[in-house]
Image 1 (cartoon, rainbow, N blue to C red):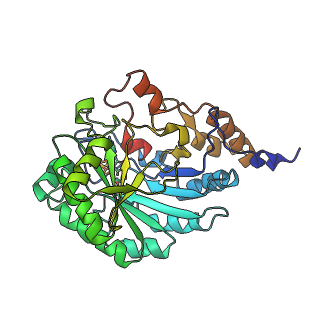
Image 2 (cartoon, helix red, strand yellow):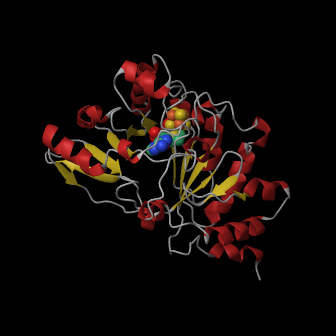
Length: 338
Ligand code: SAM
Ligand code: SF4
């Protein structure tokens, strides 16, 4: 049998979901300490020599692309702290079958890098921002004076011609009073703003159900205080449920991972910066792809290992909510990559 015939198969799991999108965490390190993500005073970083090199990442993406992966998201930790990240973007954009490359970043260092990233083939960028208030920005991220830098990066990304989206994690008692401001920001700046329900992927142990401000509550607030929302056509595999307003100005999205989990449509898989393969954010098993690369396994052998393990993709957070098993730090977002 042709050794590459394995790649005629889809990456289909036991629930019939076919993986199409790959998120690559390029580092677990970060220049922020968001309360909903990073352990306090974290020093427990991966050793630099355990990280996948860019060549190894490109090698793995070549394999995933043969299985039908079309979209790549580069994330972390903070992807812009990894040196010469634009070189990775360039190499990934040359891989057959890869149709788009995006990045999720906290925006702190983005302004000076964004043009290079765009010129290297980055198609779109998601910038995380949870508040427009300087003091609150410091309370959430630990960074003094960072808000201006992030706002400047948003402008720079637009000027560079990238499609820009904003991610906002809403935590009850922290920033739900800014939902209206973010909705207005979307309308005034023609930027898609995605509101994310707080997930128990915190490194701090602060997650509780009470801190989850639900999609339903957010919609109610925007309907009464801004303008009536109108649902847009939604690609079910996109975690964000998108809405416009009745006058057609502005787009907001909601990622209701807790109150309306969308696991049945999940087409995402992940690799971590040290080469672990995760089929789900809430997975506990470890599939090590870096070891296979180091052992000199062929693409077909690595492909077989991936296919074997994709079958074990868990149902997802939906099974944990059903069984009331949500609790803090179920996993750590900064290592797996959001
Ligand atoms: N450092 C980059 C950033 O912040 O955009 C990329 C990595 S970060 C882990 C990816 C996304 O996950 C961010 O938009 C962040 O707000 C979100 N995130 C982190 N922890 C989360 C949590 N516990 N619940 C919901 N979203 C979370
Ligand atoms: Fe860093 Fe992003 Fe986590 Fe904030 S959400 S601590 S910016 S990895």
